[in-house]
Image (cartoon, rainbow, N blue to C red):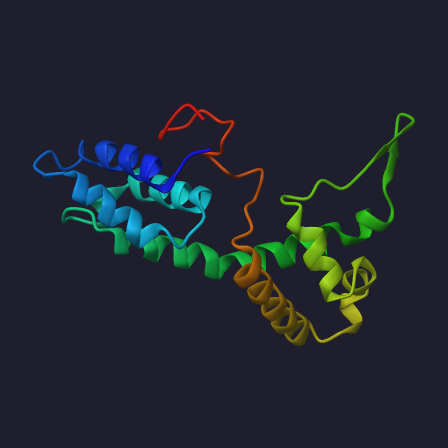
Length: 175
């Protein structure tokens, strides 16, 4: 399993390609690791990759860890509505799996946390009957459930979009 320091060390040395005059020391890596330590490693990896995709356009000075934290916060703040939309689009199928060529095709959730959140909101039946409810109220309730859940359990990672997970080969390492 990768540590914050390993992920950050690789990322910083890649970022030096954009800023060759950046003087990186062990203290630089330690400082970045301390700032980013509050977030799960996979979330830090994803934010660092997003930062590296276009660093010069967004940040013209030598990179700072608070800029990566901004990316993480933006990602975490926008995630609840993506999970809500996924549940809305898949709730009916979770109750009624499709029979295809003699095999039941179950719903594939982006994360094992998604059906847990669906259950905390009232289960799949709640979402299949959403048109009879106040959508704004339902979204607000779900956001509160999502924020409480992630505060206790950490960020929810979309299994289909984790670019640098432990078993992948990505920009920051060979998994």
